[in-house]
Structures are given as C-alpha cells and as structure tokens.
Length: 184
Image (cartoon, rainbow, N blue to C red; front, side):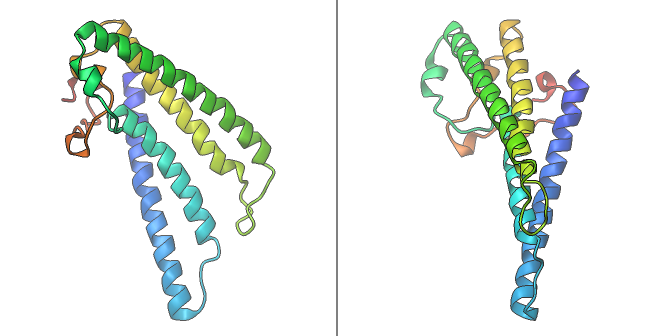
C-alpha cells in the first residue's frame, strides 16, 4: 500500500510540472500570436483554466502530504503530548468530514455539468469539477493514513502538528522513494 501511495504522489508531482509547463507554453504562444501575428490559439484560455484548476487541487493533496499548508500552530506546539494527539485526532476527523463533503458535492457538480460543453473546445465542463472529486479522494487517503498512524501510536512528534506557521519553516520535500517515516 505504501508503494501505491508513493507512486501516486510521484505521479501528482509530475502532473503538476506538466500542467504548469503546458499552461506557460499555451499562454505565451497565444500572447505572441495575438500581438505579433494578429491571430491566436482559441482553445488556450479554456485549456489553461482547466489545467490551473487541476494543478491547484492536485497541489493541495501534495501539500497536505508534505505538511506544507500554512496555519497557526502556536497553541498546539505548546500543548503536552496527549493534547497534541487529541488535537491531531480532532483535526483529522474534521478534515475527513470536510473532504467527504467536498467529494459528494464535487461529484454532484460533475454529474450536473458533464453534458454542458465549453464554448470553444467542446470539452465537458464536468472535467473541471472532476478535479475537486479526485483531490478529495487524495485528501481522504492522506488524512486517513495520518489518523491511522496517530491512533496506532506510530506518529512522530513533528507529525502531530500538520501545518507550519511561516513559509520560512516549510519542511523540505521528502524523498519520494522512501516511506514517510524514513524520509527525514
């Protein structure tokens, strides 16, 4: 199971790089064509917007795994170990509920918008909403894995605080080839 998760995270990181690269190429080429040659790529705006939505939701899953989301952790860091465990469990349960709500709502939006086509590309609008659905599945997997480690007593002290207070303290990316416990 750990290998599947690592493969999925590596695939997400590669997707983020490819989506960002495609967006840069599409937008740059469209600007050059519009101002230099009075033409353009008509699909570039729709495709760039869809890629940006997918990139954002995919990045949220990767950031959740890396504990890279910003937050206020002053109180939690000052609590004793049991208090940190209790906060971690409460946070994980709340995040699971929110992720489940995101999954249900985004799936409903996919179904509602699947037959609506984008004006230029003809691509189903539901594809854009599918990003939130796929992301919610990834978030549920990451949070459930963390909750399992906390409940089993295998979570390290730095795993109990899941956010960083400052961008200066964002942890380095773990080695994608090693399991999370051995990555640091």
